[in-house]
Amino acid sequence: MEPRKKIWLIGILLILWYPIYLNLDTLSSFIVYNIIGLTPGDHLTESIRFFVYEVPKVFLLLALIVFFMGIVRSYFSPEKTRALLGGKNHIFGNISAASLGIVTPFCSCSAIPLFLGFVESGVPLGVTFSFLIAAPMINEIALILLLEMFGWQTALIYMFAGLFIAIFAGWVIGKLKLEHWVEDWVYQMQATNTEFNEKLTFFDRIDRGVEALRDIIAKVWLYIVVGIAVGAGAHGYIPENFMASIMGSDKWYSVPLSILIGVPLYSNAAGIIPVVKVLLEKGASLGTALAFMMSVIGLSLPETIILKKVLKLPLIITFIGIVSLGIMLVGFVFNLIY
Image 1 (cartoon, one colour):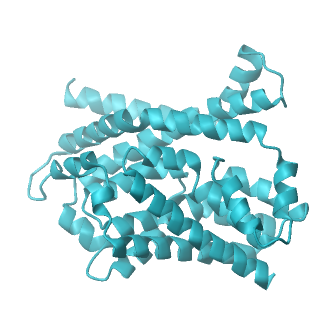
Image 2 (cartoon, one colour):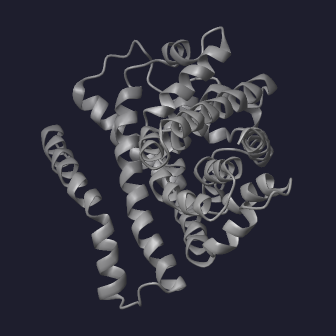
Image 3 (tube, one colour):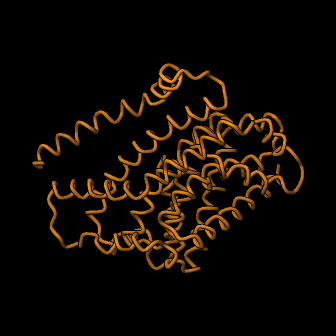
């Protein structure tokens, strides 16, 4: 296709992206209730509606993010990107990456392409994990909703707790030197990145964005669909009252148990915060509820399934263990304070 025609086509798709994304909720309801004819409120209906809504939502976000990240990465060499987020002081890189995550309102599935972009650009692995943890957990959507529902004190508590977990987990992973547990194809993509001195035209950079979109989506689409299907089943069939009764207990195991319950679920901040509000109203303690919320947003089973495409199992287990430890510390501390 001629470069100018390709630009026109991409421009039209970008214009259509927003109204489609904005009306996904209405479209998914119409498909489930009117076309398929399912009864509202049933467990199966809620699971199917969740799946029909989340799959196109995640892929729309992925397409947009991967395309623009492909363009942005064409401007930076691995050395320049590493200097920006890594440098000699890795803890500074962890802090920078975690802080960047606050202003990127993406769910865990959507953050994976950005994570890949960091690794492929040569950013230290621990720094990329700080971003991967922070991006879905403490973005501005979560903070705004917490501010509206619980007040600024709770919003600040959540933000600093999330930053602590992201920085701590990334720093530990960086110190352990676990790069050999990243799948080989990720670093093969890094090896084929554009040299910094290569002169690229505007059309060349657009092509890089399209190539990145095609390559990454082809590698992870099945994992995304399977992950969302798992989350949809949990969304429709795990009763809210059952979780509230366990999370409201004063037993020592309420925090780790809430994490185990939250991990199989899948939601972004906008979806889980109203649920957390109900859980707190039914007697769940603040620390336990925060641990549950963090595990759902930042340490979900769907995210783990998607990560399996880019990380080897030992690194996934290490990632889950370190983040779980950080979340448990936050839960126990706030249960003691409140």
